[in-house]
Amino acid sequence: MAAVFFHHVVGDLTVGKPEVAELRDTDTLDDAARAIAASPEGAVPVWRPRATPDEPPSGARFIGMISALDIAAFVAASGAGDRAMRAVVGEVVQPNPGLLREIDPGTRLIDALELMKQGVKRFLVRKSGTWTGISKRFSVLYNGKWLKNMESSSPSAASSSRQLSSSASSADKFCCLSREDVLRFLIGCLGALAPIPLSQISSLGAINPHYTYVEASAPAMEAIQKIPQDPCAVAVVETMPDGTRKILGDISTYKLWKCDYVAAAWALANLSAGQFVIGADENGSMPISPVPAPPISSSPVEEIGPGRSPRAKKFSSRSIGFMNSQVNQMAIGRTRSMYHRGRSTPLTCRTTSSLAAVMAQMLSHRATHVWVTDPEAEEDGVLGGVVGYTEIFNAVTRSACPSPTTS
Image (cartoon, rainbow, N blue to C red; front, side, top):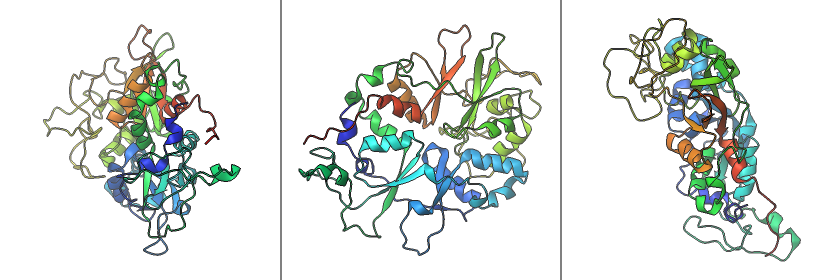
């Protein structure tokens, strides 16, 4: 195990992070859409209102997380269109306090990774204050200062390694760390993690073969009913005669990040899964609208007003941000084997890809997962599994061992 996991602490990752901006369960879905657009992983924590205006963020007030997919699915099920975006967040969010953990900034990175491997998606961390007794002789640079380890010869020294000083007050500021923040930090430490980053994901056991999928001909809402906890994605596939599955796209929180939720909700309620990922019109004849439209943004989906959509415009690839390039006619009731290589194209890698390459893919696209295809299959795009944050964290810590107790 690389020493970087024992030398670094969570506080090293909080430098430059903004203070927590709370989304309350009494806020509207329009408010949630704006918060999600500015948050990683297409999801944002939801909190109970503060008892007093100066009450600091607390894990005790955390309810759960609401995602882009949660909003789109709720609007689709309600059938109320724009009016559904005025519903309060508390009606949509599923309570799950285990998704966030409040931890001290002196927590070792290896301990934080273990928590995330167990399902924690956010850390609530104090930005101010100091700590003593780091796991090694020096902590990494934190808030512009090197902090010396005040070690004790007592066997209990390690247990006190992450205690905050008593000078901390309720006025201290907090920030949220996401799995994306941790991945970005790991990308900067690839040399210290060698040779793991250059190893193939198949040899590291980083491919999860137990992915969730729906057939392209199935209703798009069927995918919503199958969405797993992590990664929050369902592959849309076409089953080949030999039983293999060819991926056409996916329905996921990542794909709906910053989307027009009303248009996406209409598509979920009225289209098949295959039509949804391609961005087809309701008659299934063309995957995009032929009417010229303004240039799309460079984000995963077109960034327009949260939850808003021109009422006269039908759902199309442009209405949730897909590109209209290299498209072909699609027969009604039949899945297309060749689909356009626009924004509906799933993010994929191969079983022979290196872990570093997959990490870079996820970070550059701000994705929560990468689908893995089989390079030896006769057809392109034959699905073999998925790689998400959990698989990456398991791979980089696979040789983890307890921290040395020697001084």
